[in-house]
Image 1 (cartoon, rainbow, N blue to C red):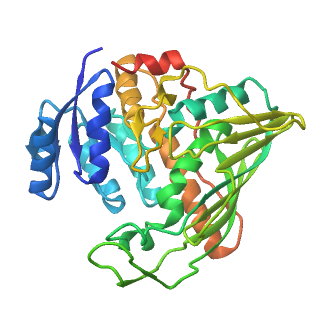
Image 2 (cartoon, rainbow, N blue to C red):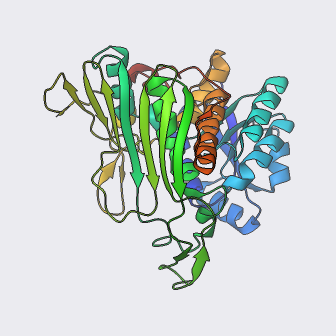
Length: 377
């Protein structure tokens, strides 16, 4: 497969992960980085033997075919639009956009230009979540009729030195962490038909407790405590709890209840973890993880725990799909539908009424071990 040149715009913390992971995959070659802060781009370029460009220079670069958008969420839509207008394929960090209209506009523009748009999250391509997908596809738990998923924590002000944007419109746990859970549910169960929700901002302000702004209060202008019901086209009804107002929780990240048994999944923010399953009323027991390459431990967290991290797998699949003329798994239809579901949750919380989604998407194709291995060098 011919290598496509990759450029990255946005040289913040997440760029470290992409710069480390992209070389693991075949079909693409890092060429250049850019940032509105030239010093940040120069530092990343020097660390990785790349070219530092201005944003305009990277968009015009002849050796860059795909641009990865790692800017802040409010810049995702305008920059991805500029990437497409420059005639390049785009891959965005999550969320793809902050409104459904923006997501649809990107979908339509990409279609008109014959270009690809991909979007994180790609963690559902991980070994754990693909194992759960195989159990569902093989009918091991029967038809999934219900489930729960929970993403809960204290919030970002306790560790992030500048957490302001997390608590403003465009932030909050639904838009920040919801994409991991919703995209994984869609790849497991298919599209969402309608949504109900109750939402609240439990605290009007937050106090930063880390860094040079320690002790400073910041306003909260978006819901931080969300409880939603998602109705899928299949008839499954899933409870989603997303909160930054919780000190401690013992809820499993995700459980799916089928007509023949139960699946318990690890955190969809990560590629790996233990999948447990019960058949009938038996105990939940760990499944043998298998040999999926995106489930192999390859990184050590700051706390010493080992994890599987293959971020850029979705980008690699998109690059391969371009040459193979097939749909890519982290595609624009999935990303737009994920935005649709998130916007429906927030709207339902405001109106206290059921909100129907207006988009749909096919389930992404499964990624079995052999297909995942083919994406790697």
